[in-house]
Image 1 (cartoon, rainbow, N blue to C red):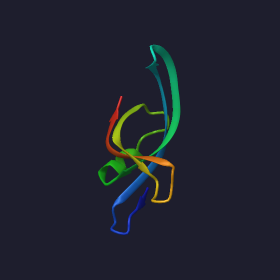
Image 2 (cartoon, rainbow, N blue to C red):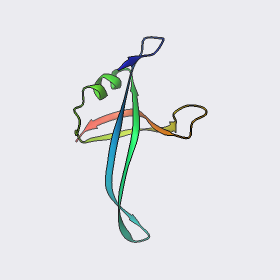
Image 3 (cartoon, rainbow, N blue to C red):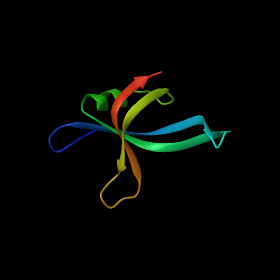
Image 4 (cartoon, rainbow, N blue to C red):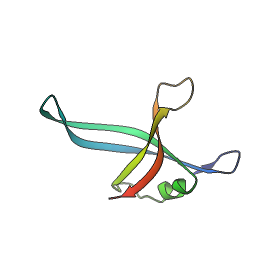
Length: 81
Protein backbone atom coordinates (compact mmCIF):
# COMPACT_ATOMS: atom_id res chain seq x y z
CA UNK A 1 0.00 0.00 0.00
CA UNK A 2 1.16 3.52 -0.76
CA UNK A 3 -0.31 6.96 -0.18
CA UNK A 4 -1.10 9.75 -2.62
CA UNK A 5 0.30 13.25 -1.96
CA UNK A 6 -3.11 14.05 -0.41
CA UNK A 7 -2.73 11.09 1.99
CA UNK A 8 -5.24 8.77 0.28
CA UNK A 9 -4.27 5.07 0.55
CA UNK A 10 -3.74 3.32 -2.80
CA UNK A 11 -3.20 -0.41 -3.31
CA UNK A 12 -2.43 -2.37 -6.47
CA UNK A 13 -2.56 -6.08 -7.20
CA UNK A 14 -2.40 -8.42 -10.16
CA UNK A 15 -5.43 -10.64 -10.64
CA UNK A 16 -5.68 -13.83 -12.63
CA UNK A 17 -8.98 -14.28 -14.49
CA UNK A 18 -10.15 -17.64 -15.79
CA UNK A 19 -13.60 -18.40 -17.22
CA UNK A 20 -15.50 -20.16 -19.96
CA UNK A 21 -17.16 -17.86 -22.52
CA UNK A 22 -19.33 -18.59 -25.54
CA UNK A 23 -17.86 -17.17 -28.74
CA UNK A 24 -19.68 -17.87 -32.03
CA UNK A 25 -21.68 -20.66 -30.32
CA UNK A 26 -18.49 -22.39 -29.16
CA UNK A 27 -17.31 -22.63 -25.54
CA UNK A 28 -13.90 -21.04 -25.14
CA UNK A 29 -11.60 -20.91 -22.14
CA UNK A 30 -10.50 -17.34 -21.38
CA UNK A 31 -7.50 -16.60 -19.19
CA UNK A 32 -5.59 -13.38 -18.50
CA UNK A 33 -3.80 -11.32 -15.86
CA UNK A 34 -4.75 -7.73 -15.12
CA UNK A 35 -3.47 -5.08 -12.74
CA UNK A 36 -6.12 -3.65 -10.44
CA UNK A 37 -5.97 -0.50 -8.31
CA UNK A 38 -8.07 0.54 -5.33
CA UNK A 39 -8.08 3.73 -3.28
CA UNK A 40 -9.50 4.81 0.06
CA UNK A 41 -11.25 2.11 2.09
CA UNK A 42 -11.12 -0.29 -0.88
CA UNK A 43 -7.31 -0.08 -0.79
CA UNK A 44 -7.26 -1.51 2.73
CA UNK A 45 -9.72 -4.23 1.69
CA UNK A 46 -7.57 -5.15 -1.34
CA UNK A 47 -4.35 -5.14 0.69
CA UNK A 48 -5.81 -7.60 3.23
CA UNK A 49 -6.78 -10.24 0.64
CA UNK A 50 -4.63 -13.37 0.72
CA UNK A 51 -3.08 -14.68 -2.49
CA UNK A 52 -5.47 -17.10 -4.17
CA UNK A 53 -8.65 -15.56 -2.73
CA UNK A 54 -11.50 -15.69 -5.24
CA UNK A 55 -13.19 -12.33 -5.64
CA UNK A 56 -15.75 -10.57 -7.81
CA UNK A 57 -14.56 -7.11 -8.85
CA UNK A 58 -16.28 -4.13 -10.44
CA UNK A 59 -14.63 -1.04 -11.80
CA UNK A 60 -13.55 0.89 -14.85
CA UNK A 61 -10.83 0.01 -17.34
CA UNK A 62 -8.37 2.80 -18.01
CA UNK A 63 -4.84 3.31 -19.28
CA UNK A 64 -2.15 3.11 -16.59
CA UNK A 65 -1.02 6.62 -17.57
CA UNK A 66 -1.62 9.18 -20.31
CA UNK A 67 1.18 7.80 -22.50
CA UNK A 68 0.62 4.10 -21.72
CA UNK A 69 -1.28 1.45 -23.65
CA UNK A 70 -1.27 -0.88 -20.63
CA UNK A 71 -4.70 -1.40 -19.06
CA UNK A 72 -5.55 -1.15 -15.37
CA UNK A 73 -8.87 -1.84 -13.65
CA UNK A 74 -9.79 0.96 -11.22
CA UNK A 75 -11.93 -0.76 -8.57
CA UNK A 76 -15.32 0.44 -7.36
CA UNK A 77 -16.31 -2.75 -5.53
CA UNK A 78 -14.65 -5.88 -4.12
CA UNK A 79 -16.71 -8.90 -3.11
CA UNK A 80 -15.29 -12.17 -1.75
CA UNK A 81 -16.81 -15.29 -3.29
